Length: 350
Image 1 (tube, rainbow, N blue to C red):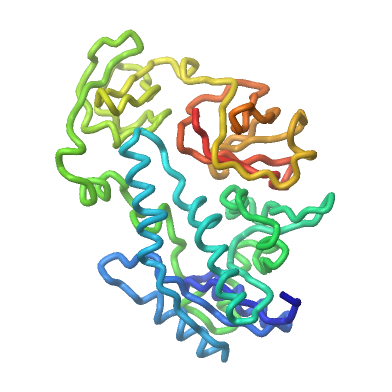
Image 2: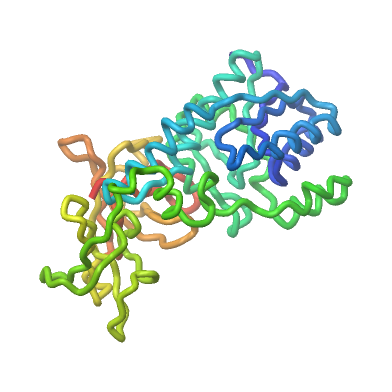
């Protein structure tokens, strides 16, 4: 597609996408807002009204796109399956890389719109012949960890108007322009379809017989207590175990077939110096594989560890950590960086 000044903006009806629309218009773009219907708790569609009303005030076109069936299939069902397999899912990563951005591009192609945009707090940069996602300027809101899976044909068309400003400034812009509802909206927290407690969500969405009490055991296999069901625990978990021994206890391993959760009183016993990634994406193999200055992160805004990445004969990415790291959970995402530039990432297999 030939470049033009048109942009399709993903609009949730929240603060970030609202201000993104304003900034894109300031920059001279012809903006169309699209609101995806992913999941509507208790059939609440207020966000659709908020997005529509904002577009009306700004004088831009607004469309909605119903993705509830796909969201259930690709994100919610996956989320449930991963926990029921004793793994730790990463729904926001999969949603961004395999649903939200690809469908933005798909709609833009149909509409003859070149640029695609969101209110993500990330930037992009072009180096060594490739587009890369780059950390946003606001360290408390940076979302680069979630976007390691995007292909070049999407990144080259991305506009990221919030990448170089802070969330505080975004709220100020909305207020200065009289959009007080947008300026004062609370940030969304956690996973959109179960923002508070995934355990209650699982109980409502799997058969009662699928989650039943089981055994906590120590590393030697000794019974040390009862748990509420293995899907309710994740590797490295310390709080909420319901067993007390006057010392810190950590989840070391989850055994779904036996409905057992292995507990250790030594965080060091959870340490690993390597991991293997599936479903990976590498932007430029020459800048990543075999290099000793790569950083891996396995949690959003936490932990940054030096590593060396190589390819195995089975097609996995092998991540050799320069220092051991505790609580590496199968199913989690691992994002690979050099300084503040995303080189790729994948899903932890083991």
